[in-house]
Image (cartoon, rainbow, N blue to C red):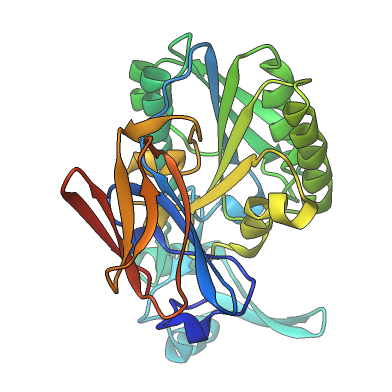
Length: 351
């Protein structure tokens, strides 16, 4: 939804997550749930995790719809118009034909080459490679117990359920690697095989942290939800090791709706452990944003502190320590709050 201008723009009892671009640098994630008489707030303090025995992985979507974000697609320039089409047809370099009840245009090789030469057709930019060259080394250096992050392509092959292993890359190797897409692009986008690959391969790791780069168009969402729900309950019961998974949306036509559904799964299915988070690459402030939901609710970031509503009232008082995950309520008419720690204040607008 568009950024709300006031609480009146938000439906009751529905969670709304503040965009990263509107967050103070001190915060990782901020969620608002409007009630009839108040605003319930959940906010995390942004910190890089330090977890002994961690394993990390990065999975890059290899489905056909990702060819543009990988720089393997083509786009018409703004100067490409009907006059260009008519000239190409007149010169025999393009043919208009009817296929499946629709008018289509088919270029000869000479016509295609001319479109490229004249700048009417331009190759897309590889948006995935810079992300991979940042995220993979970051995880290898900062988090992975072995100093190497496992990289795979997923949604590969005819059915989109295949996986192509790139390998366990050190930070130096990851910074030099080329990320051009899989050998065989997938016709559909199946996330579950990739998620299961990491969970099962690193089942004995103390903690697993896995990043999935995608345009968000999933064909097995229900299966991923069910697997996630089962895994969440097993983690909650102490029968499986903790796991955190983050979807990063890329491309000019990111479908965020399915990513949001996975992000909101704990509320939808009443799950004990929140496994999925999602980010949009274009809205990320820096790489630390992928850790927005990685918080230890028992960890204290300061000995004392308090939260003030914008009307000056005290919304929360932390006399025994300020936790890394804050839950408090503000008056329904509030438009912001301030976290006060030993006189150092961090103010955050809600609208």
